[in-house]
Amino acid sequence: MGVRKRERALQIKEAKKTQYYAKLNNCPTSPRKMRLVADLIRGEKVEDALNTLRFNPKEASARLEKLLLSAIANWQAKNEDASVEDAGLFVKEVRVDGGAMLKRLRPAAQGRAHRIRKRSNHVTLVLGAIDNTQSN
Image (tube, rainbow, N blue to C red; front, side, top):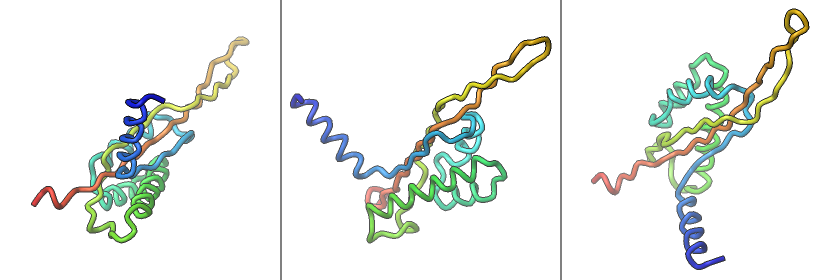
């Protein structure tokens, strides 16, 4: 490995120490349905996002709520002495990407068949902390 490549890898490693994220892979919901719920919580404070997800009737909101709780737990693992309420955590980024697609055939009239695509998605949720030292 070259020097520049090694230095860049170390920079990325150091940056990940201050990033708090959680991933959900191969969720059996279409990306379009998941994005509708993800758009509701993007940029929100963690407490507001949890309340929004808890009272949303969509199925995707239960999965995103669990993912958000996982990201908060990841934050707590890296910051054991701090409390979540004082940290000012917010949902910095929510990415919903398409996952694997199961392809099925549905019988149609006159011997034909229609293709059914059962979509899945990958969700990446990144938390950010508001720095109180910079705002003063």
